[in-house]
Length: 163
Image 1 (cartoon, helix red, strand yellow):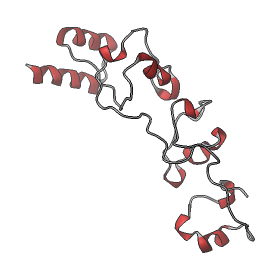
Image 2 (spheres, rainbow, N blue to C red; image 1 turned 90 degrees about the vertical axis):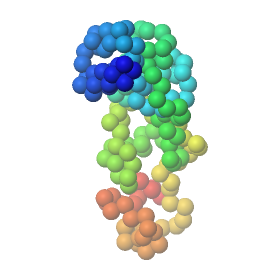
Image 3 (cartoon, rainbow, N blue to C red; image 1 turned 45 degrees about the vertical axis):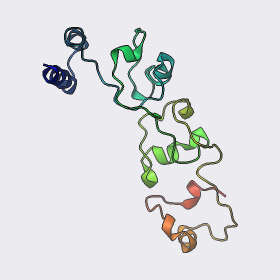
Image 4 (cartoon, helix red, strand yellow; image 1 turned 30 degrees about the horizontal axis):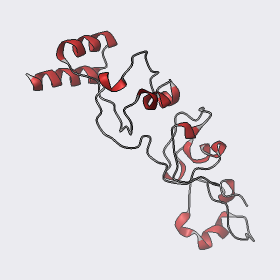
Protein backbone atom coordinates (compact mmCIF):
# COMPACT_ATOMS: atom_id res chain seq x y z
CA UNK A 1 0.00 0.00 0.00
CA UNK A 2 2.88 2.40 0.83
CA UNK A 3 4.47 1.97 -2.63
CA UNK A 4 1.10 2.60 -4.24
CA UNK A 5 0.58 5.71 -2.11
CA UNK A 6 4.05 7.09 -2.98
CA UNK A 7 3.52 6.32 -6.67
CA UNK A 8 0.26 8.25 -6.65
CA UNK A 9 1.99 11.27 -5.08
CA UNK A 10 4.87 11.24 -7.57
CA UNK A 11 2.54 10.82 -10.54
CA UNK A 12 0.52 13.81 -9.44
CA UNK A 13 3.66 15.95 -9.01
CA UNK A 14 4.94 15.01 -12.47
CA UNK A 15 1.72 16.00 -14.15
CA UNK A 16 1.46 19.23 -12.17
CA UNK A 17 -2.25 19.00 -11.33
CA UNK A 18 -4.19 21.65 -9.47
CA UNK A 19 -3.32 22.50 -5.88
CA UNK A 20 -6.75 21.40 -4.67
CA UNK A 21 -6.21 17.87 -5.95
CA UNK A 22 -2.78 17.80 -4.31
CA UNK A 23 -4.25 19.00 -1.03
CA UNK A 24 -6.84 16.22 -1.20
CA UNK A 25 -4.13 13.59 -1.76
CA UNK A 26 -2.11 14.96 1.14
CA UNK A 27 -5.15 14.71 3.37
CA UNK A 28 -6.21 11.25 2.17
CA UNK A 29 -2.88 9.52 1.57
CA UNK A 30 -0.48 11.49 3.74
CA UNK A 31 1.99 12.30 0.95
CA UNK A 32 3.66 15.72 0.94
CA UNK A 33 5.33 17.66 -1.91
CA UNK A 34 9.12 17.44 -1.79
CA UNK A 35 11.33 20.49 -1.41
CA UNK A 36 13.30 20.23 -4.70
CA UNK A 37 16.60 21.51 -3.25
CA UNK A 38 18.77 21.21 -0.18
CA UNK A 39 17.95 23.33 2.87
CA UNK A 40 20.17 24.36 5.76
CA UNK A 41 17.37 25.28 8.15
CA UNK A 42 13.83 24.07 8.72
CA UNK A 43 12.51 27.43 9.93
CA UNK A 44 9.84 29.36 8.08
CA UNK A 45 12.06 32.46 8.19
CA UNK A 46 14.77 30.61 6.25
CA UNK A 47 12.30 29.41 3.59
CA UNK A 48 10.79 32.85 3.18
CA UNK A 49 14.18 34.44 2.52
CA UNK A 50 13.68 33.40 -1.12
CA UNK A 51 10.07 32.23 -1.24
CA UNK A 52 8.50 35.65 -1.50
CA UNK A 53 8.16 35.47 -5.26
CA UNK A 54 11.87 36.30 -5.74
CA UNK A 55 14.05 34.68 -8.39
CA UNK A 56 11.26 32.55 -9.77
CA UNK A 57 10.62 30.88 -6.41
CA UNK A 58 6.93 30.54 -5.70
CA UNK A 59 5.57 33.07 -3.25
CA UNK A 60 4.97 31.77 0.25
CA UNK A 61 1.44 31.05 1.19
CA UNK A 62 0.05 31.93 4.58
CA UNK A 63 0.70 28.53 6.15
CA UNK A 64 2.93 28.17 9.17
CA UNK A 65 5.42 25.33 9.38
CA UNK A 66 6.76 24.88 5.84
CA UNK A 67 8.29 21.49 6.62
CA UNK A 68 5.08 20.25 8.19
CA UNK A 69 3.64 20.17 4.65
CA UNK A 70 6.80 19.80 2.52
CA UNK A 71 9.25 16.88 2.77
CA UNK A 72 12.95 17.71 3.14
CA UNK A 73 14.91 15.75 0.51
CA UNK A 74 18.43 17.01 1.28
CA UNK A 75 20.20 19.17 3.81
CA UNK A 76 22.93 21.67 2.99
CA UNK A 77 23.54 25.19 1.71
CA UNK A 78 21.10 26.43 -0.94
CA UNK A 79 21.77 28.22 -3.12
CA UNK A 80 25.27 26.76 -2.87
CA UNK A 81 28.12 29.01 -1.76
CA UNK A 82 29.38 30.91 -4.83
CA UNK A 83 32.47 29.26 -6.37
CA UNK A 84 34.18 32.65 -6.65
CA UNK A 85 34.62 35.83 -4.70
CA UNK A 86 31.53 37.98 -4.38
CA UNK A 87 31.99 41.32 -6.11
CA UNK A 88 29.99 44.38 -7.06
CA UNK A 89 26.37 43.47 -7.74
CA UNK A 90 26.16 45.35 -11.03
CA UNK A 91 28.96 43.14 -12.42
CA UNK A 92 27.13 39.83 -11.85
CA UNK A 93 25.49 40.15 -15.25
CA UNK A 94 28.88 40.27 -17.03
CA UNK A 95 28.98 36.47 -16.90
CA UNK A 96 25.57 35.38 -15.63
CA UNK A 97 23.47 37.04 -18.34
CA UNK A 98 24.66 34.69 -21.09
CA UNK A 99 26.61 31.98 -19.25
CA UNK A 100 30.02 33.30 -20.28
CA UNK A 101 33.06 31.32 -19.17
CA UNK A 102 30.82 28.47 -18.01
CA UNK A 103 28.96 30.61 -15.48
CA UNK A 104 25.41 29.57 -14.76
CA UNK A 105 22.81 31.65 -16.58
CA UNK A 106 20.73 33.63 -14.09
CA UNK A 107 17.12 34.11 -15.08
CA UNK A 108 16.59 36.61 -12.30
CA UNK A 109 19.10 39.38 -12.98
CA UNK A 110 16.37 41.93 -12.31
CA UNK A 111 16.75 41.24 -8.58
CA UNK A 112 18.24 44.17 -6.69
CA UNK A 113 20.49 42.21 -4.31
CA UNK A 114 22.05 38.90 -5.35
CA UNK A 115 23.50 38.45 -1.87
CA UNK A 116 20.13 38.09 -0.19
CA UNK A 117 20.18 34.46 -1.34
CA UNK A 118 23.67 33.87 -2.80
CA UNK A 119 26.55 33.89 -0.35
CA UNK A 120 30.27 33.98 -1.10
CA UNK A 121 33.13 32.71 1.03
CA UNK A 122 34.72 36.17 0.66
CA UNK A 123 33.90 39.50 -0.94
CA UNK A 124 36.03 41.89 -2.98
CA UNK A 125 36.56 42.99 -6.58
CA UNK A 126 35.33 40.35 -9.03
CA UNK A 127 36.12 39.55 -11.78
CA UNK A 128 39.68 40.28 -10.62
CA UNK A 129 41.41 43.28 -12.14
CA UNK A 130 44.71 43.02 -13.94
CA UNK A 131 47.41 42.98 -11.28
CA UNK A 132 50.27 44.03 -13.54
CA UNK A 133 51.15 46.65 -16.12
CA UNK A 134 49.65 46.20 -19.56
CA UNK A 135 51.60 47.47 -22.54
CA UNK A 136 49.20 46.27 -25.26
CA UNK A 137 45.48 46.14 -24.54
CA UNK A 138 44.60 43.59 -27.22
CA UNK A 139 43.48 39.97 -26.73
CA UNK A 140 46.52 38.49 -28.50
CA UNK A 141 48.91 40.22 -26.10
CA UNK A 142 47.00 38.90 -23.08
CA UNK A 143 47.03 35.36 -24.48
CA UNK A 144 50.82 35.34 -24.77
CA UNK A 145 50.90 34.62 -21.02
CA UNK A 146 47.30 33.67 -20.29
CA UNK A 147 46.59 31.14 -23.06
CA UNK A 148 44.87 28.80 -20.58
CA UNK A 149 42.34 31.54 -19.75
CA UNK A 150 41.05 32.30 -23.23
CA UNK A 151 37.36 33.11 -22.92
CA UNK A 152 36.84 32.84 -26.68
CA UNK A 153 33.29 34.18 -26.56
CA UNK A 154 34.50 37.51 -25.13
CA UNK A 155 35.63 40.32 -27.39
CA UNK A 156 37.98 41.96 -24.92
CA UNK A 157 39.80 40.89 -21.79
CA UNK A 158 39.49 44.44 -20.48
CA UNK A 159 35.69 44.38 -20.69
CA UNK A 160 35.68 42.37 -17.47
CA UNK A 161 39.23 42.74 -16.15
CA UNK A 162 39.62 46.52 -16.26
CA UNK A 163 42.94 48.20 -15.71
